[in-house]
Amino acid sequence: MRLAHPPDSDAILSVRQLGVRFGGQQILENINLDLYRQQVVTLIGPNGSGKSTLVKTLIGAVTPTSGQVTIAPQQRIGYVPQRLHLDPTLPMTVKRFINLPRRHPRRDVHKALEDAGAEALTHAAMSELSGGQFQRVLLARALLVKPDILILDEATQGLDHRGTAAFYQHIESVRHAYGCAVLMVSHDLHVVMRTADHVLCLNRVICCQGEPEHVASSPHYQALFGDQTAQTLALYRHHHQEAANVG
Amino acid sequence: MLDDFMWRALFAGVLVAMAAAPLGCFVVWRRMAYFGDATAHAAILGVALALLLNVSIFLGVLTVALVMAGCVSLLSGRGYAMDTLLGVMAHSALAVGLVAVSFLAGVRIDLNAYLFGDILAVGKSDLWIIGGGVALVLILLFWRWSSLLTATLSDELAHASGLHPRREQLVLTLALALVVAVALKVVGVLLIAALLIIPAATARPFCRTPEVMAMVAAGVAMLAVTAGLRAAYVMDTPTGPTIVTLAAVLFTLATVTTQSWRFLRQRIQ
Image (cartoon, rainbow over all chains, first blue to last red):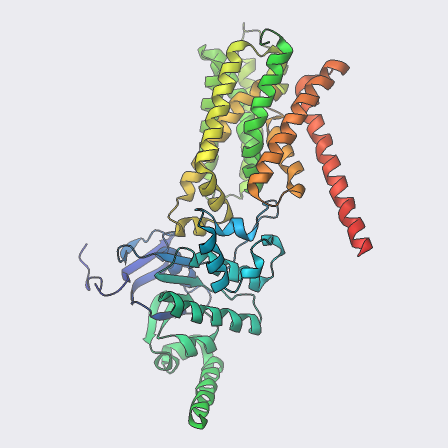
């Protein structure tokens, strides 16, 4: 198959003309994206826009109907899923969970838990964790592979404001410590504005993309998310600039 | 020692328990109870076909159990709710199997032996087959253990770790067919699922990791087999159902003690 643009050789993850179709329904169409070293790319889009499907395609859980995903050789992917339902009949401690499917040296495990802010939970049962603790353990598990790319699928869903802020703080420090690129699906527009280098707005196709400010002012974006969120963003920018002026 | 039918029965029972209990943990964790039932019930069709074609019963049962498990795996996720699909398959397999057996005119078979097991009739050659089957199941489980666990936690996590959940499902399917084939003689098609599920369910409240649960379940299953054999001998009751009854008693004891312990602890605090 001839591709219009070949995968970018500088990118650590390249998607070209990706399409996914489920039972006659086109979920994703003509997706092109490049992820570069240490870049933070955020994926936003309304419910059912194909965000999760795109993430699942990147980790290999969904086979694309057309197009291709290219990952640079020897790049490790750490994946933090949206939510994980553990069957209550399955007994599982944090320590055991983190060592699946491969066991890691005790020192590495300790460091990953520490980096994710979950070092106190090593011996806890997974079923006793709060939502925020659970997500931090999932993050620690993703960090154990020493990822070059960290992929997060709405990792803060179900967390309150404080929990969400704390979780993203961890992501931010982890990103610098590990020097990894981050691709995340997020609904938390404040976070998007603050941390993302590049925003992709998805609705079956990529309807707009660019720097956060650029996307927020795009008519596509406003049509999808309505005025209210646009105002949220405007308000955020306003505060942000004021703070910058004061400082 | 193997010349004594009681010792042979005990060996066969303990061997089957060693394989059935850890596999049963996966059946419980993955909510495949009906899947086990459907595969086990299909075994009676395997018996009928084996008698008809004059091949070994073990082979007939293994083949049909594999086909059945394969069918269920293929059909899953194609529009039917899994429990409906399995409900249809489990009972149809049993009914068709019973009808097929009745066609075998001229062959006198003891249907009860296949429905409820005939552990006291285990011969030396049966023991070899059971031992081989059990060894194979345990090797499969040991080899794939971590991958199976990861795939059980989440398909996506497994994919992201470079595993193939479909392949792990296939491993479990194969192990299940093997356990059905070797457990037929011990508890019969109707009670194989009980030998898978009850020990695992009994072990659950006492365990913090999957590995411990598999081992405790194996212990529970071996205890049920040993005590069941003894009880059946003393009370002159059918052996297979007695073994399962003992397992049920252990489950009840475990549940009652852990629940009342939890209740008491809450009252004290």
